[in-house]
Amino acid sequence: MDPESLSAMTFGIVVAAAEIWDFPKARSEATRVLLALLPCDDHSVVQVWRRVFNSPWSMADDCTRQILDAVCTHRELLRVKHGGALVDRLKRALGAELGAGTGLPCCNCTLR
Image (cartoon, rainbow, N blue to C red; front, side, top):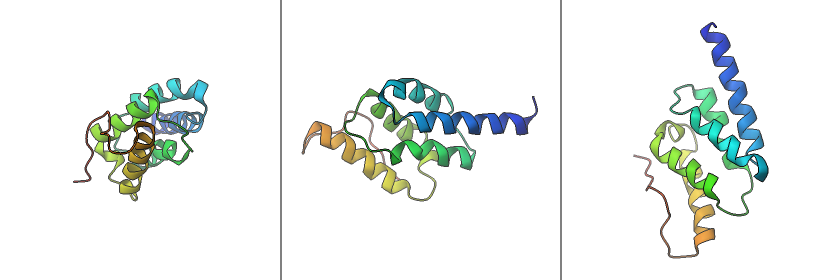
């Protein structure tokens, strides 16, 4: 398979996984797929990968924690426009579940 076809397939897979991440029954498999695509240096794939942060989260679940840990480990997800907003969104989601004044149950993120 030529590299261009592989790149297009990867893009399609990340779009599908990011779209179904909103559905609780599909979230676990979508998370597995999204995590398998990291690390990634393709800017278009990174932008689509971050779509999961546009969905309304009613709670922080195990998949949310895995995504946050991936963001902390694979900082290329933060090296695009609005990376700080993404981190703030995740902190709010996890903080709401844990209550005010508690620490997050994952690694610390910085934008440096």
